[in-house]
Image 1 (cartoon, rainbow, N blue to C red):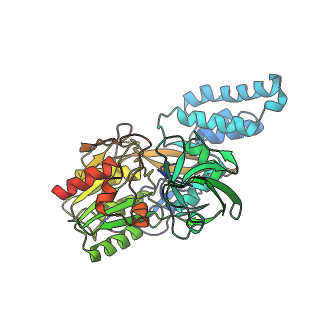
Image 2: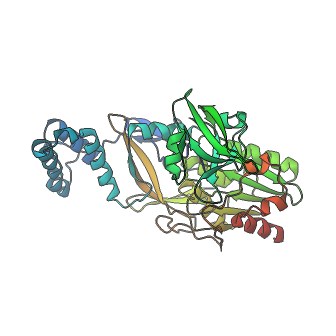
Image 3: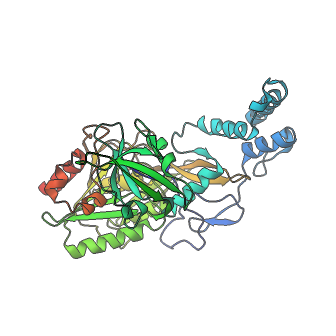
Length: 456
């Protein structure tokens, strides 16, 4: 399942001014800026420069700076002084000797070299280099809005196409009358059979105000139909929910931990409590993560504060471990709870999952999570590109590392196939499903969570 502007993955908070709360430690930020004297998280000050990368980029412009360049007031380590000149020599040799001068692209060479350096760290799927466009896209996505047509897409039953899972209220897709189950056959008269998720997304996204033509096949209709959609600013429903009154069970989906996620969750919980909710399925499947502070706040909605309860432990490069306690005031601290996860549950979503399980507030059902265990910090580069580097590792409250190993569910349940659609509150709401209808969707993970709550 993905929407038409799916988050790449794993981001954290922008700079915030202000003093920390007296009873809480400073929040590490996964997305601070590298401008000197900016406060991040709470009152932490950052004024860092990039060692190897500063040397690397300046070396290309004016020759290798080697022994004269310094990082944070210190000479680069001996290993860097030994090997870094090789980069400049290789660059120079390519410029001088490669036969096809037209094939030499210095920007691509630079970006590829930086990406390769980050990839050697082994922080797969997390620490990374981003182009200026990718940086802008992530910042926009974490604001909760993006340019698109406002749909959630799922594999169709054949696994060859993608179908509409749900439309966002008021979106171009909703206004055009697209419905769940509509199968996308072509975009701009180009067949999308066999297209990957990324390939399809690239055909759908585009500048605000631009148009695309989509050909779809609706179940039960003999002929496909075509619609023209104009791309607009979309406000993504970061938190959505659906209430099954016959069982008093609520299905809450958090798509990512963007700005304002906890505020949206609190509104959802307030509404559900008025309806009489007694049990909750918290769906974190395909949630790529987001802001660290939102994860702390969201977990705290379900866990009682006090008695030494923590949401997460953060370990720095010196081995120091800092606990981040549960915040008081949670709205659902005693409601029976199941957390749904899968292989794409990552980063901040893993923090919440680990916190709920280790504090014995609910069980976890689904598949092992992605295994992202580092806190990211963003280092901006002069052309608008950026390095995202894991500067800290996080552990569950019981001290278990998440990095690489992920979180194994209490009850392992696989989906019948990769093309099986996941239940989604937007779909449940749009089709006004009963519990019986939702349980017949084929989503075995949702069914396992629902039945568990019925019996406990």
